[in-house]
Length: 355
Image (cartoon, rainbow, N blue to C red; front, top):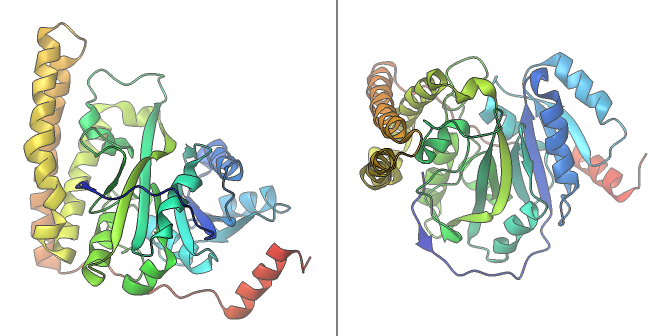
């Protein structure tokens, strides 16, 4: 969740090279992964490179390596850290060569001007991160009538209540994000132990933790959200059910407890307070009004908002108690770049100096 603070809109652009990191973990998303990479290749502002980081799945790693064996713009890499999205992203950061690193989910496709929208604000050296908007693509073809837009973050998408335009925010959303490389030099990488790891509950919060650490270390840093940098994020059928909604909101509560332990409750829950006291009550009222007007799902949407709040709050309480008993359960790693000779070899390949 993010808090708006208007900042000047500049369109001057930059000459910064942008590396795109796509993290993958399952062959079930094979077609989605290919579509994600293709959307990067089709950008109006070309990427310097695309790095496909595979999370501890040798079969998928081998299959993708063969798929892109003759594509100089795509590199396929194994996750060099522990299982999970954070370590996969950290691997991509360490092996990338761009001055800006963008992240795209493996089940999303970016619109043609996605990277151009990301690049423009970096002409201001104070800008260390730029995020965009994620639109849901429902497998059933339409939004379930009980599913409130205020909770689209449950399915990895932008939600009602986020600011519009290009605005300054506390944190950006991890599935559609970019960072200046120097940001990772300042605070290290994404914390492991907070976000998803493929097997456990669908937790999140690692990008919130990183962004808060970044602005604490660099108080002059500017983090932006530009809703014109658009991706379309697939929502599988399994996530269109209330059972997943309940699991994900509970996991978010657990995640927020870890983030609050890492950065403190004042910053860790700053945007969440506004969301809970303004956005969600307005959503309940909207749902009840829709019910009065005989619009489908109005009462169910209002009830789902209440259920989501209670479930997330329960997760936060449980997570706080667990964290207090167990101590810190996450780790922030320093990003170590690839060996100089490897970076030089890959640079030569980019220039066409090597086979």
